[in-house]
Image 1 (tube, rainbow, N blue to C red):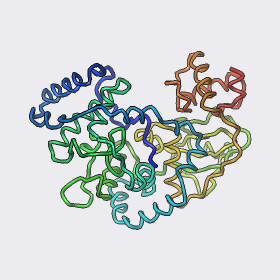
Image 2 (cartoon, one colour; image 1 turned 45 degrees about the vertical axis):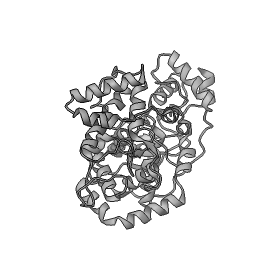
Image 3 (cartoon, rainbow, N blue to C red; image 1 turned 30 degrees about the vertical axis):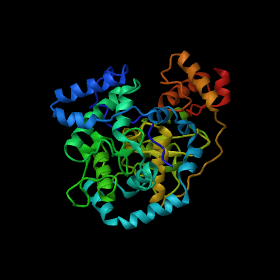
Image 4 (tube, rainbow, N blue to C red; image 1 turned 135 degrees about the vertical axis):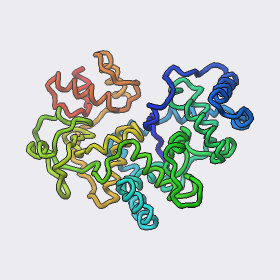
Length: 390
């Protein structure tokens, strides 16, 4: 089973149209506007007509876009759901099968094989389940819907360009509900900008060629800012008492400073030359990780905190890391309680984004701020006590 990214912000947002891009209204009229814009952008009118011939709204796409409750699950439950022994075994088997491709990836982009294997596993189960949604219809449906037209509208014109190059069939190309294509699920603009012919056959075939998909995914990560030959995540143990407000994504400190506070690696040594942030996905009593600068690149691929951390951790497992110490985290909140907490936090002036029951970055930051204000351990893990105190 695949778990698609809920926000789909791939470094494409910087290239996307403005947030007030035209959307909604009559679907037929909307398609007519797309055609006019495509021609104005220089696409041949006959090609544009051929691309949009038979286009239709897909209600299943909208349903999928609004049904992503899996991301409400806490890290321990989410990661155990996605990471199975079978996925680990298959990942290591794929690493052996495509060893020469991963060698090229590591040489050209400095990206460790576990990183790509984890994405390949989570996105499509190593290519086995790539999605059966018509990609053109999915993109037009999501662009017409007014939730994120700034992301999806530009993808339509990228798909037209792929069509003109002979690399996209409007009636037959299929993929994920959100318009992603291939083994590592890339949007049309990603393919245009980062597609690599990994197997040397003169084409970029992300649905059928693992070398093409892996090399293209690696190039995209590199373009997103991946630092060659650097780590991304390492499990650590933390002392019983420390300043928990120092934890959280993006709160970088030199590794020796973390070590002086009693933070220790559970396996191997820590890279003393790099800064890192302390990640406590379920608070001070749960698993703990140091995240290095490359960890931030994961959020350009997917903005779900629980997905990102699970993918980054799985990459380390595929390369020999031990199973994390789950600890004994405090009981979390139900989905209903989380929505209540988000509402209370929003009413106190915090920007938590959509009230969706998902413990994302905004909600975590707000929780940590309120924990500090109330004199609670500021580990960003929401509990019934915090909800009651608010």
